[in-house]
Amino acid sequence: MTTAPAELPPPAPGRLRLLSYNIRSLRDDRHALARVIRACEPDLVCVQESPRYWRPEGQAAWLARATGTVVLSGGGRIAAGPLLLGRLGVRVRAVHDRLLPKTRGLHARGFATALVEVADAAPFTVTSCHLSLDADERLRQFGLLAGQLRYAGPGVIAGDFNEHPDGPGWRSLADRLQDGYTVAPWGGEMTSVPENPYQRLDAVFATPDIEVLACGVPHGLPGVTGADLLAATDHLPVLAVLRLPAPGPGPAGR
Image (cartoon, rainbow, N blue to C red; front, side, top):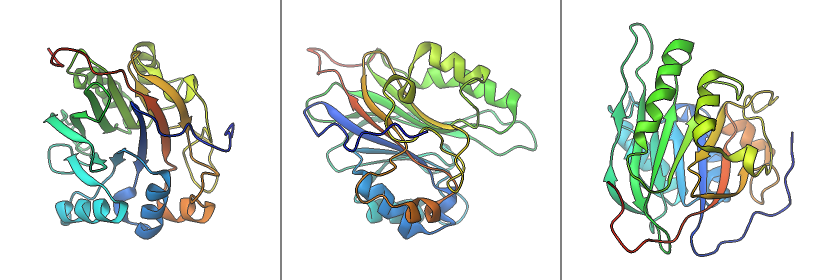
């Protein structure tokens, strides 16, 4: 379903663009992928399935250069695939990547998490995640996500949840956080698969103190072409525009 207005809310103090994207280990058309990311003009990119077996640091560095961003956290053995990229104005105050407990025979999974700060806004936590295909393991991972919101201030969790919105883990997270597309639908809803989107597996969640202004697949956004979306990877990206709370008088965290 597409509900997009032609334009996103324009830049403003305290306003942030966050993109979540499963890039399938850069196995597809990486130049199409870079064009999509650049066209979305994100302040932050929550990447899933960044390369982790062949030169992972070099591959992450290539993606950062190609998209005009820098690596903030993740992408290594601890995060096990998730990666955080940000524009130059994003400052990292702390990194809290986490390798998750692993079920024998299943892929290693992790979270890429950083406490970051942008101008005219309070520091906030951002986590990129890619949850298990196994239902029982995935439900446990949903339960661990709340622990990544390590501070009393605002936070965002974005990623490929490998679950539909009516699943138990998704519902438990949506009971505590705002599901961006549900709160402020913009663009497309379904994220898999690009040639015939029929399910929503990818999402951006935000704490109640963040205002979600728009969220969805960026169909029709200037510079984002259907050909590039098809060629880039096997998921569609989710773009969210968020208004962060103003900075408070004291230090963030607890």
